[in-house]
Image (cartoon, rainbow, N blue to C red):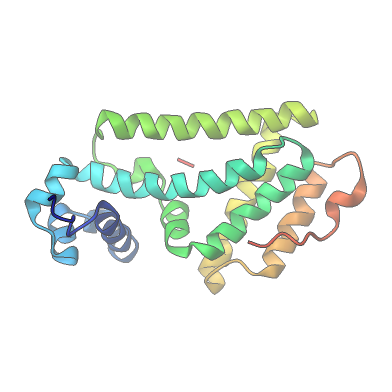
Length: 205
């Protein structure tokens, strides 16, 4: 009967995330992960042969968690979905502050010293492509320029989330309301209802 995994991959990646957030990218070494989790070096290196694989896997896990929610919100590819998706950036950050901090403080390229394994590189490319395709679909559906869509649905909510997390921990209702109003102005829909409050509750490489 197979033995249960004592130190799961998620436990290791949680440790990487904590190390990066508390000590910067250089703090996330395989040895530090071993000390933080009690895992053997062989267990860590078996799953992550390179140091860059460790940090890339932690960052991409956070991005994957975010994109699953964000891309679902963008699914209808219209202006109303755009407002909801922008708000989702803030509400997701509020619900997942550690993953959000990892994504907002560090671009993936800034965490790496060299190349990652091909599988992680492909995952990063897939994330980039999925986000680009979704934003392009919104631009086509609404008739807005792609640069305006990216500004409203990526740059603006990311900037507000980053400031909010720096100033008071997580985005609050005022931050969410401000983003909702700003996106409705940047990407006006066919009617004025886009600027009305919603009951919705809950970052790029």
